[in-house]
Image (cartoon, rainbow, N blue to C red; front, side, top):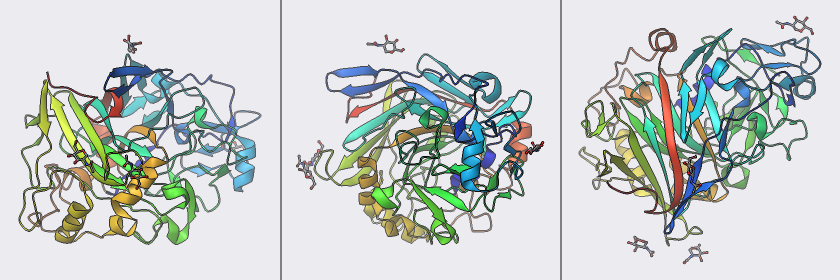
Length: 459
Ligand SMILES: *[C@@H]1O[C@H](CO)[C@@H](O)[C@H](O)[C@H]1NC(C)=O
Ligand SMILES: *[C@@H]1O[C@H](CO)[C@@H](O)[C@H](O)[C@H]1NC(C)=O
Ligand SMILES: *[C@@H]1O[C@H](CO)[C@@H](O)[C@H](O)[C@H]1NC(C)=O
Ligand SMILES: *[C@@H]1O[C@H](CO)[C@@H](O)[C@H](O)[C@H]1NC(C)=O
């Protein structure tokens, strides 16, 4: 729910990147094959590859190696306005393995949590592409999306996430003349938290009003935020998992939008996107023996996760009415468990508007999902095409307690909706996760999507 405000852990080097392109390191995207399925079988989408988000990259002046951005601050003697920063600063190519701990092998992607090179990189985020310069655009209505994941090395407080966002296929290059780097350099990120830690938004530096983070040596926030609708397929560690749609009221049914002030959810819930979403976390739904080490879904082993986007007339042009989850492990298909606590109208096992209404009422959560248009709005956004993001991160805002512990920490953990997992309420502090779990990592593999029922089998 709270999520990526904190994706701030973008601790990468103190380096920076800009919207120009550096010439020091050639940008070579790791290959990651993925598949499209129909009733007649699955075929490889050609040219599958991943690209590192621009925010993690070294940002230096276009005509030299002076940093445009160091640690959590812009170098104001290089540039002070958004346009100047876009003109004078260049985003550098990435050494994926050495600097960022990102590798691919066959159809598997590994993202390490911590990588020590000349500096320490924390977390990482990549996008799936089908060419060197364009993100793959997924059309998910009346389709299902499936992947395998190994969360066995993700402890409390760290999140290995796989999600869709309504980014532009070219990273915003054609819309924003200041952006000369584009998708090839991982530009154009946005999500439903309207993150203000992005160094560039809409082809301009976010340098104006930039305030270094008090807790994160590698992040800060600017005047602007980058909003768009988001469909979280998977936010998880070895203890808890959730899937969560977050619609927005930005132009183009949830498309990329540069917000300021209240629009950026300051205060929370007053902006143009739904920051909480409507989540299905089996533990939070009262099913405590379902997901975790040694449980029904055993997080010590590889898991196959299927997500189905059901429309009202079983057609890709219909209205999104339900998002279903199916699990496969050890050759066994396992249905998502029905909710298990008193007061619900029925034991729901998937996300629908009725489930969301009922859950928000009983949990006494803010109905921001409904106010932002609910399932139908999420569906209109998905119909525009979404980009797949894969990441690992820790949480400088809420220590990931909203995912894996009891939250808020001062609420009665026996009240429905408060307990989300078995992690301690004192855990998840970014410093602790970085000190105690330098070997944390996530492995995503065998990504495929297509007609419902065609991406997985038992056996
Ligand atoms: C699809 O890609 C996988 C992984 O690269 C490869 O092993 C397989 O042979 C490919 N299949 C086809 C039909 O090209
Ligand atoms: C900031 O830029 C100036 C040149 O404009 C340079 O001399 C200085 O070293 C830079 N500061 C940092 C911290 O990189
Ligand atoms: C859509 O497909 C499901 C499953 O095959 C079926 O139960 C349902 O009746 C269909 N709905 C419509 C409106 O055709
Ligand atoms: C599904 O619903 C949409 C929107 O009402 C409509 O445009 C489309 O023709 C319908 N498709 C089918 C197969 O009924």
